[in-house]
Length: 94
Length: 94
Image (cartoon, rainbow over all chains, first blue to last red; front, side):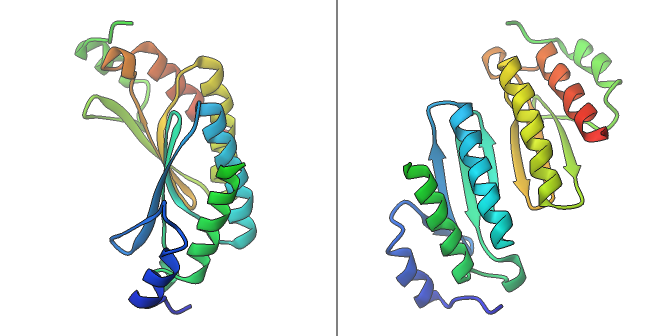
């Protein structure tokens, strides 16, 4: 897998206004009404991630989940990161 | 809720050889054969945590979960942290 170049990353990122690029990863913090909703969302995402064989780096503190996506194998960002980000946004919007 | 004092914390910690005390929290890293097992364990812990109304700070990267426990309301460590740590160890040992 080869990583996207910087221009490709910036272009794709325009479709993800809630995500920021930092240290070679795209990041977003998700907030929920409670731990129940936060972990419920994580469970949904876990199923998607496992099906994609592409897993997030994420931290949960009570009702918040901080996500960092990159492709370790490619040492950078790939299309998979943006696909997973889109799925996370979609599941969050529900 | 009042926090445990330093002596109480050190005494309790003796029963938790896999946990370390750092910056007012007790910490352990759990490693699993795969993401499936890691997230399965997190799901089990989430049910326990919600029942206790006491939630971990935790980070998952693929097959690893780094846990930090403290009691935010008490600005320190309480008996609840050690109860949750014991449950995490118990569910991990299965």
